Length: 167
Ligand code: COA
Image (tube, rainbow, N blue to C red; front, top):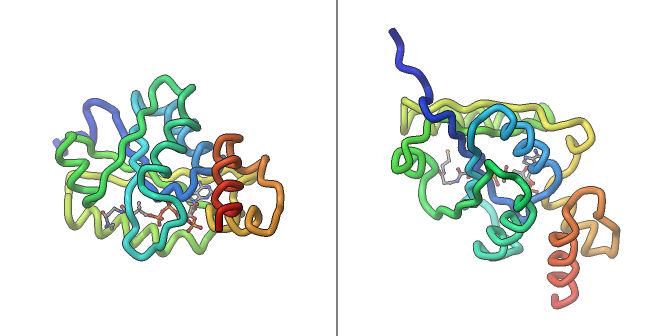
């Protein structure tokens, strides 16, 4: 019989979270209903230039997710698969918003699986309400003085305002 993907039913939701938005939180909330524990892994996409430091991205995620009992925020600056192996976790969660997400996600899922065959990537469709937002879009709106209260938690909106006030 084929080996089970997970015994502990823990899953990792990795991302840049530069910053975390309600789109990410939607995926986390729904995953937390399915898995016993979700580890939100704040990590690096080497192709990105970040607006917030690693520490700030992590702190915003911790603040925004403090009310979820079975969600833990962890930062990690290596390969995702190394984190999975080190922590005996086999499930990765990713959200899909629009068709254009699919290609990038498919590549990542295959690359991760090639590096660690025991893992699986689970995809959830981002709620329609958040399917058009991204961290970059939220930053752009704040930069030009717009209101992002419906897309990011209050503490993140404050950090965004500070970021663009000092630049
Ligand atoms: N709702 C709204 N927006 C969402 C979303 C959702 N549910 N899910 C993703 N997004 C947005 C993000 O805000 C982000 O927007 P931005 O590009 O404007 O910043 C974009 O979609 C993608 O962000 P994210 O999900 O954070 O992924 P990423 O592409 O920045 O990073 C990592 C991917 C970090 C998971 C990947 O690079 C990784 O695993 N890094 C670790 C090193 C490693 O193992 N590399 C090999 C990977 S094969």
